[in-house]
Length: 270
Image (tube, rainbow, N blue to C red; front, side):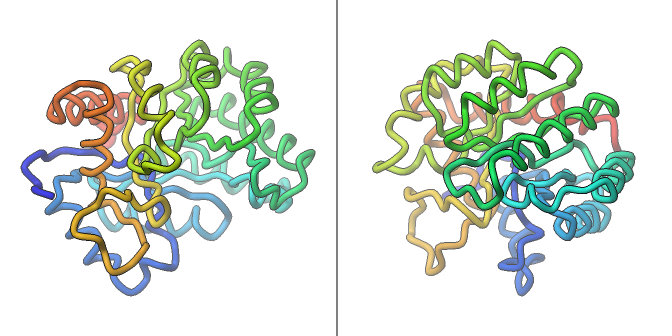
């Protein structure tokens, strides 16, 4: 796809993932050529939090980081990790806490541990005044209830990789959340309902992300040799979102980049 549209911001890319260890710099260059001007690198456990910060420091003004504990790893939560995440939150490159939340689809950590760890990270974000980058899959009821208990004390909240129902979307919008849309919307098998509900997201709440290396957009042409997703494919998400919303891609690119800068305070950093 042509890189004619520039200044895109990918608010969720797992570039600390080992699948990028052999060609991370090349992937960053491909993203630049595709019009992706900045990326937020997701931290999801103790190791990736550190790697995300290192990457952001290596590419100031272009890469930023989050720090948190994904629900898959919720059983690893302890006081020491909480203190380290709080320390990381004080680094200027770390623009949000997370990825954190609930995942009842895979249940890789027991649900009580997921709920306790999610609540602990919400408390931490409230005490620090940091934006939140949240994950929810097949856990809307519990996720919404916990978030609702804390929302009044929280800063910006991003529900990342939204794939849920219209009712769930309405609940998150009512809680003043921003909504991240990934290549799920490009999937003709699973993404049809998302193509419908994405129209309901107000301009000022919409964000774009790849969730690389996951969720390769099925619309990418020519078909990549690898199933690995990367930030260079964000324009395919942009095109699908623009088509579903009946808006020009240039408009969607501009509003989502402005929203990302506002949500995460990117303009204040460099």
